[in-house]
Amino acid sequence: MAGTKAGGMAAAATNKKKYGGDFYAKIGAKGGKNGKTGGFAAGDAGRERARVYGAIGGRISRRTKKA
Image (cartoon, rainbow, N blue to C red; front, side, top):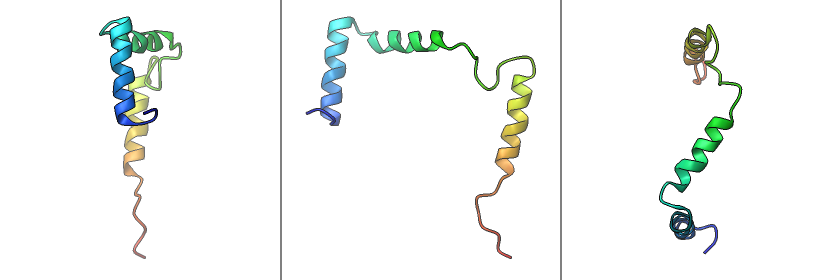
């Protein structure tokens, strides 16, 4: 059953039974605490930079020009 949805659900059930119901929350928290860079919007002007570049990206059209 490896690699199937049913197999994944069985593995998740086993992990929760062995290590507790909050198993996935714990490993997710470990990954989050491991981060050091803070992400794109980190720093002094981070939120403003994210807003500006997000607006630029939103203006870029994916449609072809109709000449």
